[in-house]
Length: 279
Image (cartoon, rainbow, N blue to C red):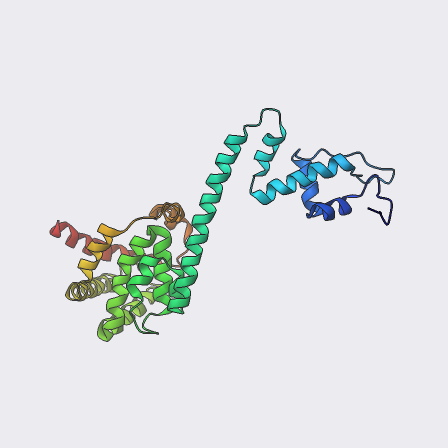
């Protein structure tokens, strides 16, 4: 084959990176981590790459395309490389990526089917709320479900979804919920936590809670909750994304006044008394 030009004996980093299909920044990183020996510099202070350097760089790029990690590449270039161990780790990594791609495709499918941010939540939540007409769920409902799913996982969020089914299908209960939310928001920093209004509002919220639970029972949603607990198969990846309630308290910002916090605590006490009585 006739060569139109005489090939250079050495090339600069830009040409080396271009030939290997990478960037100068990546090549410099390979030097920093000891994966690619740093060649000598020329009279102008710039690195010069020869044939052996380019072959090494091409092997690095080919292994990167296969999915082999940089750490495993170092082992592969060493005399004591255990290729079987490296390939086992690579297969595990590929399996995890395949699982993630499958999860992402399922999420895209839900988004297409639902046509709203509801499709971004887990399948358990989407399936439970998918029958509601467009606009039945408010943005604040979806936000609450999103936060719940982050803390308690898809199962916890799916159970909470029953509340929003009731609110979406019972205008009277939704109106009362709005009134109570507005009253709670009015418990600003100027309200003393021991103000009688705090106790009064907690009692009203408790009565509303009982009405919502009764509506859920009448609609058979409590039975649906039991079925969820029995059939739900947790995804290990989803479980890893969850955090404890304690972590959430220290990381999720809520601008609640002391009076509002006291109202919430009092409501929890009243609901807890019901749970104890039922137990």
